[in-house]
Length: 358
Length: 268
Image 1: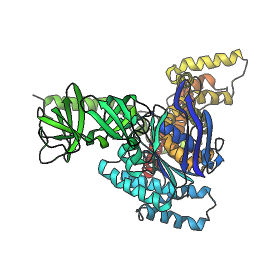
Image 2: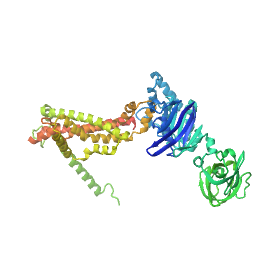
Image 3: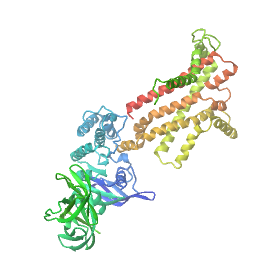
Image 4: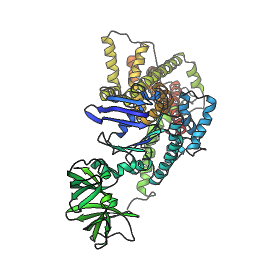
């Protein structure tokens, strides 16, 4: 049985549709990420599961029970916000104990449960302090402790890492995943950060403009994007209009400008059902720059000119021009990056490409 | 170039500033000083230091009655204004009320209307309804023009309390009512207290509206002083002035101190 089921739900505010009719099943214990740019409806979905918004149509089931008419305080959910939302007038221990007061927990047991939760988030000694005495990362750990101490049926995380510094964010990402795996709670995580989604999720729901674009495991969503939007949102991609000229049981042959004929494994083009118009998806990190006369092996090699160099330390992002098409490539740096204006060859292995219907 | 802090210009600015302060505060200082004068003429030179006028004040039945009236009126005004103000602010900030802007403007309007106009208008309105003046109507009048202050202070605070905090409390199992008493009210308490204090001091201090609205025979401290001044300037009035100053300046200072303590504890 799924922990959370969204059954044909939609949310409209007046004439504006925040979430178009869609369904979603979230398995017990799964870590599911709603991923998309701001305004895509991911937070609206989360707030409907939480009971902070009523769906305009459809049903929400938690643990198999319809909860449309159950108010938020009776849903037994853990909720963590971007800006922590700790109670500033209560100590850390009082914050964590807050939810236990409304449950059948014997008063004598509360301090122990609070301490266990603080141990779990690795802040065992801050119980007496007030939230403002803690750093942002610490406050978010306390918010997490407060949400999980009540043993919620579902943990809902609304961009919990977005307010943290870049370095701290990556530490917290690992930490959050560790805690989630440890307690095994079904988790719905909302983020606009593709690397968080790829690193943490069992399943990613990519959303755009109130519609679900794709649901799948991180590798699946990354390797075989179901739409142009997904291809561009998870990493940078070059989308090139092409023609599907041949389909066999194990490969699809595309005729694309610049690169010519490419035979793509059929699993990388699951939605391309017929010959005719198609789109070639070339991930920026799969497009390699090499010296003009470098051997290409099994890759296709085409001449190009570097236009812009965006140096990033361990990697570099190039904008190159091949014929009259501009492409972007993200390559690891081997000694020095190519300078703007250099003549290079672009190498692309057909098996690294994906294809979409045109 | 720029004048250094020791230059003539800056010294003139200093002297000028000092003069402005003297102009503003000397009369008050004189009243306070003369209230301790032993002489029975409320004027310089002082003939000796004495609490005589305070003692007489404490034995003056009319003044004591006025004091009681003022304090009861002030406390009731504060209580009613604060309750109404908090409820109105909650509705305007937390819920979608049709015509919220309009309602907000109307509630704040009594500050913008000159008090005399408001006083006369209310009086004419009561005449039109053929209702006689009474203490209840005096109280209603005070509530009308203290309410905007409460609403302004409480609303400002309420806007700064994030909705997330309340949503977090509800997700943890607190009902909307429990959330209000556990989270929202404690967080806006400094503003509620400040609003109540404003309402009390404004009511305690008011003379214009009170003169129009008070029923016959009822005097508040300011109207009592006003009545006494018509006869003579007794040193008792200086003593009364001193008491008023202590109350209207001291109470808000006390209130601010309490609010500071509360908010430093809550860290908000």
